[in-house]
Image (cartoon, rainbow, N blue to C red):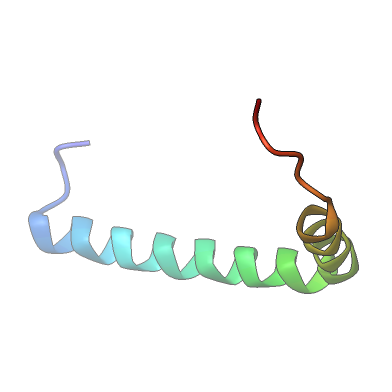
Length: 51
């Protein structure tokens, strides 16, 4: 863990964040229909006033 320099850790962090962003975008693209359905459901439910 301490073998890498600060610059190397910065590169690792950068590429892991790029990979995570790509996986997130892919996940959203695959599940777009489910995401829009959930958003539509959550925004269409009538909220009753608190007593």
